[in-house]
Length: 480
Image (cartoon, rainbow, N blue to C red):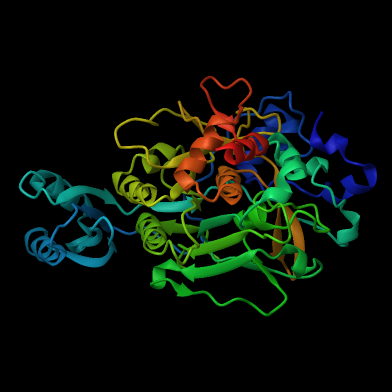
């Protein structure tokens, strides 16, 4: 039975307009195969098989062009950075146009601009001279990265909050029941000891205002622009709610008057604490670059106290140039090194696996696996969605298909349905944060281990993979 069929008739009308924005060519291909494939996720039968559709990686002009010919170079710990910059400038004919430094582990990441745009030859030259320069650990291209929502959805405006049941068991809240969240909420919400804390690296949030009561929605959100030395991003007018898709999934209060219940909030007295680090060049950009991501992760490492202490750092971005880009991003040694620094101080980097219908087989190869890579599951708790990346032998997953979230659009607060592992990463992060909220003695690495060990297996997965089971994880945290 699909979610759409379970809806009360008077409620289902609100969501009939929800549909994907396919390109003409994609729509034609789908309709030629099976017209059911063109239906939105709330209406599509679960028994049909639809052909894979990958997003077009080309820039459509809606976002600023981010590609450039710069390179990224990771320096070994304790390297004399000034001397390395001088050597690079003299020997490779490059300019060092930006750098970030991880103070605790004492290493730096440089962004190099080759002369005359000669990126490939400069990259090859670095590989050639690494034996003479042990401080040069790895070099990589400054790739373009996009958020992991593969398609935008038409929005269903909610004209009256009273028309939505105040009920976390409402059918469109299926991710909560799949993760055994509601049982945990009923049994354990009085035992929570501290607010759940989550750091989100992404775009600057939108302001969500009427018709929802901001007092029922507002987690404690603080925003910083990591690309401008962590300058605070001003909040909007008092009385509004700041949140992007990820913070909507994690932080909205459970007992509000809307459909949405945030996975990291059991009680209004302990609202989720969200720190958002902007890693996009503008507040409305969906795309960014690898160096911007590295800058944001470095900011998270250097500002743990500002973020409230050890906790999950959730990031829903992947390489734009690789349709099955999880492996390329996951096996990037520079990002893995930063993720290792997060782990050593009790944080953990949680990343979306990607949103292209392919099987990525590069997981667990080569570089150390310090990143928790989250695959998306569908309503049946399977890997059957034709729009979500699977990663061979990756044990981490969370709901990712047809999830409701809040969005401000045209001055109205609306409910949006999203398909993408961008949903999955913040949901796994919510489970980590809630385990810590019930047992503050655990850091994020320890909490992540409990979530993995107590998770619900993905149905029919060809390797062992689980989604969070909030009841089991919190039970284990209280007994730890």
